[in-house]
Image (cartoon, rainbow, N blue to C red; front, side, top):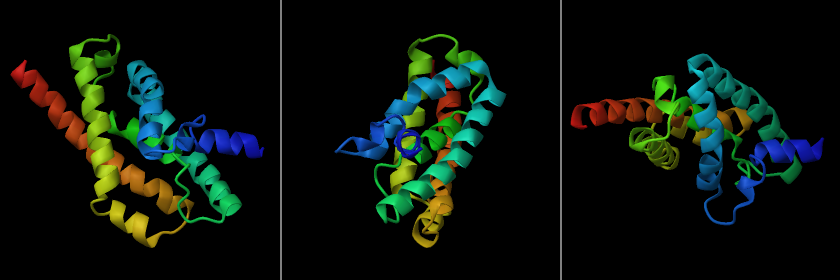
Length: 162
């Protein structure tokens, strides 16, 4: 069971990246998030919810196992946030790989990382005041929601420019 908890919490080992494990986890999430996004809003939302609730469990497990408040190896929260960031984009945009879909993924990834690092309220509240698995996951949910809005705005801007 320990192996499965670590595998899921580290998103198949990407959280063990020695430099910027959160960024590595976000990058490792892209193929999965892309696939669920191409399947539609409901599958993507279900994936986000699944990673959230299982993430709460495995994050709590790792926190206890490592006796740490925010183990850097845990990146399942980044996977959840990345999924949330694409919820407003039409699934048809992910049925093909072209410049527009690449731009959307780049905008999603970049804005999510920005908000995850910056932690505007309420992400800062969850990160600073809730020192448990719920807080660990909720700060990335907040960053994912901010990123969802930014990604949608950039997606619409792309349509206006090109």
